[in-house]
Length: 505
Image 1 (cartoon, rainbow, N blue to C red):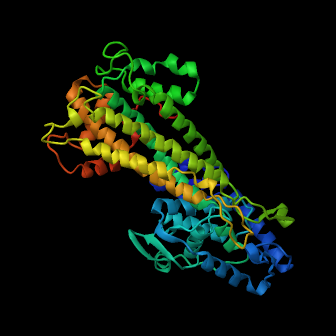
Image 2: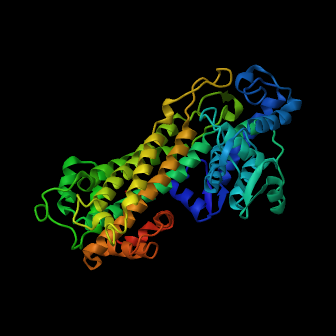
Image 3: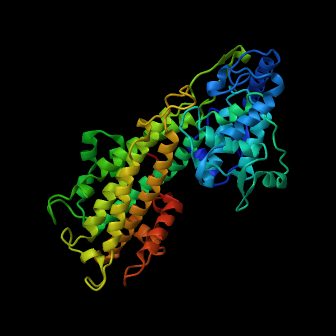
């Protein structure tokens, strides 16, 4: 059981909740703060004070006063009218993360929501009732209004959910679990939808996958080095220390470890004096991607524990401040940075694929074919990798440089952070397929070299991989191999291949 406080949620805990089904609960101390914040809202309503979002309309309607007899109608209308998401739904794991992150933000005690509502959110998480939330429709400022409105619909018994493997009406799932829908009171609708949880949830899931991919890319690259008799000298510790980037130093250390007992690597001058950059510069390029991922991790863990609501309630209601914490610019930048960093792992991987299949660049059979000419072997796998890499270049265009005014120019600068996070996730899926192609080609190359000469670590990886994708003895539908290898890379526990190596960056 993981206890949420609003201040201490980590990516490691997110991984446990999202992928290992760990249950969650709210800390008693945080709930006390929530209760006090709620009392402040109720005083404001009873005193008919003019406070944005509590006794007024929203956005451009902030100057419209709402009678206290209509506060429930105001919240219900807000949720229904703002549920304007379109397109395919977010992956279930992302929608679950969204619910979790919204509950964690509300536990900070600045939002004026009742503890009851947070308890309902945590019930959705623990009972795997996952809101159906369309991916498109958020500008990434004023919060992720459209996506979070679809989340909020579930609490009031409207909208749809994924439940027990099916897509169904929310009220059906709630009734089966004995959950009574909420009637939203003053401020609660706004508290539920004013936040960055859509972009952050997408970013969290994307980061967790990207981190695993970055580790896998090093192990796959190590096998490619063996397949090409790569020069190990370039990975020497003193070379990396001379530049000084810790991530570069760590990447080279992991590769040296993977290849420590390999008989397939070479020394400089033994076969050639230098390798091409796609081999020689792995620590520099992959290390730079790790630098970017470290930045992304830092920003996500701040945002996961941030108050992104508006207005925020301080000093037991004596201060209610309308600010801009809902603006997604920090996460928009981080997601754009992640797009570029992960795309580069595929860019350099595709160049290694080319070196594995191009007979002008190696002494292996052309295109790793079992019968060159009669059988094409891995020829078109490189085409597929090139296409994915090119697509990534389009997706990597920064979303955060765009803005468009909304709400009659009241909200005149927005982040597009949710678009950035969605594109980052698409890039990650493409990168995994490129790495799967390199893995297939590298396995074929080391077979030609002699698997008995492989390093212990890469040999173990090879054997696990061969259980997924058999050796190329005959041309076949390689699309199936690529997808199978890609799915396997997504689901394996990476540490099983390197139990004696610390994989923390």
